[in-house]
Length: 387
Image 1 (cartoon, one colour):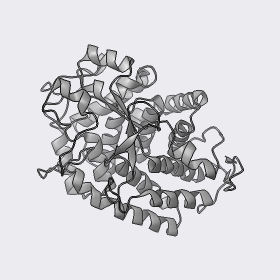
Image 2 (cartoon, rainbow, N blue to C red; image 1 turned 180 degrees about the vertical axis):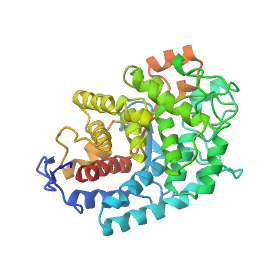
Image 3 (tube, rainbow, N blue to C red; image 1 turned 135 degrees about the vertical axis):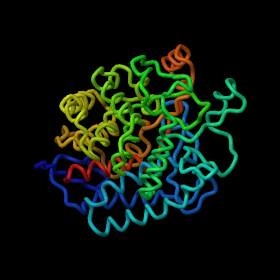
């Protein structure tokens, strides 16, 4: 049995968090849930009601960002809160229910406007200029970003959709694989013949593999107990080969162009494995935990340590001890941390040689931030440590 103990001092003059046992309704859990609820928009001139404000920057720094209305972080926060809900007390469960209820009305504004049950990162109910337009337009005047697998499956999970809708979308997804109808744009050649899922639903968009997106897709398949297809098995094979060949360590920006860090890839794999056991991944668990511990040892970023610790906990191991931050520093050290969980990767759409050059020079990368999601990741870590 895992025994993890934390004492959290909300006295602003103290550094905190040493390993010790916390109560289910600990002050830090109450504080973080209240903080998350506080950030959910009620009325704002820019952000939609129910949205958790997020920001975008063209360099990996929280400062100098601009506001961005998207549904992505709402999906992640809803998914995570739903996942940990049973591990907190009744009052906190009610607060989570309230947060989830307030987030749901925003989703239709990001849904496919032709009636398909797929979702876009950005609004589909109104015309607006994409933040990436300046880089995309030189390659095509008419390009728009199609709905994507990631936002679709995460939205359906966040909305707790019905089984029939999940099955219908899963059937639709079978037409958006690496089937030769669109150009394949992965630098990792081993993937080129795999009939796994593309990131995008667009028929005219290049096929892009992202191992973290594939983890989210398979989490959706597992959560809804859907019958596995050829594309599901191929997607699992891509994940397995990524780990076996250490692409998540030596080439994370190509294995997972939209979540291009080893730590984030490991977190996605751990989250998939926590849904339901998958034998092909279970045999890799010791390697995955070892990789996570090694990444933890070499990281100096508190958010990275948090998600790596959560991954290790999801695999059933006790993560290394580390010092967190004081309550007074939550905003600066957690919410405004420079660690970006998601990257808008324009070079991923480019042909292989151009993609490689642009990626190596870090051109065309847009870093997304959401303070409330960082709080949610910290909350998840604390809840996992208490199990």
